[in-house]
Amino acid sequence: MPISHVESNTSSISEDASILSEDRDIKAQLLQQPNGSEHSQAAGVPPAVALMQMMTGVWLTQSIYVAASLGIADLLKDSAKSVDQLAPAVGAQTAHLYRVLRALASFGIFTEVAPRQFALTEMAEYLRSDVPGSLRPLSMTMSDEWQWNCWGDLLNIVKTGQPAMQKLYQVNDTFEYLTQKNPQAGALFDKAMIGWCSAIHLAVLNAYDFSGIHKLVDVAGGHGTLLASILAKYPHLQGVLFDLPQVVAGAGSLLESRGVADRCEVVGGSFFETIPAGGDAYILSHIVHDWSDEDCIKFLSNIRRAIAPHGKLLVVEMVISSGDTPHFGKLLDVEMMAIFSGGRERTEAEYHQLFQAAGFQITRIAPTASPVSVIEGVIETSIGNAKDYDSKLSNHCNLGTT
Image (cartoon, rainbow, N blue to C red; front, side, top):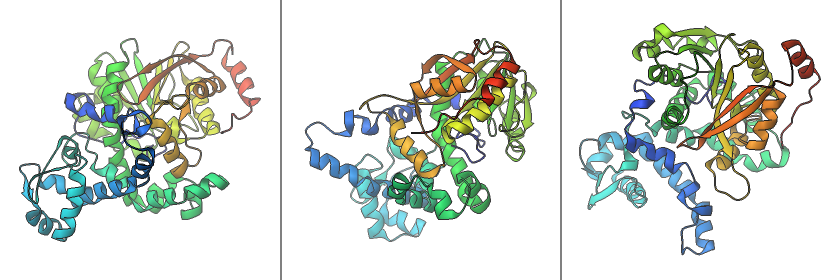
């Protein structure tokens, strides 16, 4: 869910996902299920108490936001400090800051090592601004005013189907708001997506074998964070980074720093208009969930026209489980409904429909150590040649949304 109707793995980050230490994989594990337990209810907790804890989750969200915004973790990176030292350093009231940190420590975010003295924990490390995969920008984005307002409008969204961004900010979509109306929020959102995707990149690299691919096109690939990681691991690969011109303009330094610039062509354009041709694999990471079925069919169909005859389409997204089975994507789906017009997470059946409507068939869905899967597809052979495909597409009705 990136700004440039591209991906959440966009803007540059100096550290490659593949060099993240193994303990950083805890992020992926934590995202597997809400609160890490079936139906998010701890054993022995009465249902009413469990429900109340969920209802008051915003208290914890906002407390994390306060610590993230004040940069508390950065001040504690070398040693524990007392709240009397921390408060004047961040311009906060000592008593008030203590109460917030005490609450966070009760959840394992910071620890009170001595009376009124706090230190980092493994979770609090992710609130530092100088670590690979930092979640500090994500915390700040999740409590940013525009996010807050959109979630506050959720009841109206459910009742009317009217997108909150259009109603609240008079824009066509969230991308317009973040790039034109509030670029400061957009810059923070980009940084948040880097932290969000750092563990996912590593999980994708570990779960999917790219060795049989020769030319990989990263569609809506931002500054090339994911593509650079793949090229670094597979020296034989040639890459094409494709995104809006103003986005890929900032990719050069990242590709150079990763040592893959000589194997990566950078192309600017809109995937709603055309796609670079000739790749034997096209990858989209956290793009499809930003868009409605109708929009997805448009750009996936453009890939269908551009892809080599035996090429592969690789979609990196969450695949929602059926029934009551806990899955992080089910809550993320509500987030997409709240902040994107048409954005949604999808089930396996819905992905089969989407791929088929765009001229592909799913060959396999490869799970990863994170909540995302790599959905692999190939050209649907029953369609025939490109002319036959265009004829079918012109007569195709929208899948619609439910």
